[in-house]
Figure (tube, rainbow, N blue to C red):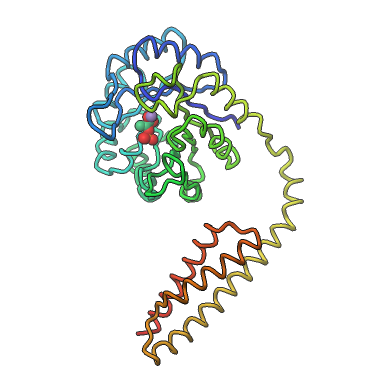
Amino acid sequence: MSKTIIAGPCSVESQAQLREVTLALKSIPEVTMIRAGVWKPRTRPGAFEGLGEPALGWMRDLTAELGVRFCCEVARPEHVELCLQYGIDTLWLGARTTTNPFMVDELCQSLHGTGAHLLVKNPVCPDVRLWIGALERLHKAGIEQLTAIHRGFSMYNNHGYRNAPLWEVAMELRREHPELPILCDPSHMGGRADLVAPLARAARQLDYDGLMVEVHPHPSDALTDAVQQITPKTLAGVIADWTSAPYPTSAAAADRALDPLRRKIDDIDHDLISLLSQRMAISKRIASVKRDAHLPVYQQARWADVVSDRLHQASSLGLDPDFTKELLEKIHAESVRVQMENEK
Ligand code: PEP
Ligand code: MN
């Protein structure tokens, strides 16, 4: 299946900049469509907020001259009306917009019956329900062509990314809506030009349907998101990397090799579930001992010992410490819940 590559500047900054980047992107055959922001949601006031309607006119003229297609971010009903007026009918909802059901509802009213194609970025916070909610609202408004864009989530600890990828959140969306195409936006995810290629590669491994990448002819001069934009030449390399990754040629051969390994995984999972159930049964017995001795359910010193002992074991077995800690915390939280229930 062919992949969708959307590329273009974070913002349209001038007619010359738009023309330069459009000509460069037109020469990369894999580029499906050019992104260009003309209304920019800025975190702080006073920053460059986009050129608005005049930029849409330049986009329309470039489409007429070169046959390229553009897409644009919309956040208000008047943005939708203007884009459609200028012949731009692929529109995207930014992360801040997806977060707000009132804004999505207003947009739905202006989108109804237009036949526009909507790309919906994930909401700022890692709430898959909010993402699905925005997509469902659009679908109910008669928008048939919908695509999700995974651009990462704003967290207290972003683990070195501008927006933490949290691939598992996007996986949940894909589980619920397998029919929905999903693109990765490695630019807003990484927030740094050098992270675009590795994040794009990760999305490729996860079988995403394509990318939305910020591309500027002279990134260091960009008025918005300068540190994360890449040049058209770098984009060509990212695309080459993306498209050259081999596809499985014979699913049947792979299945034959995978089958016995999957049976092993099934067995291990059954053992894990059975062990967890045994562990919870012991927790219940512990609850009654604590109750009789008037001891609190939560024992900080014991918990610290458990974590340190298990992390030690995990490290000697080559398990990731963050993963191990998260798993232990989940198990411990459930064990505390079970003990509290048995307190009653
Ligand atoms: C953008 O695409 O330029 C943008 C503002 O993105 P996001 O909504 O992901 O922050
Ligand atoms: Mn941007």
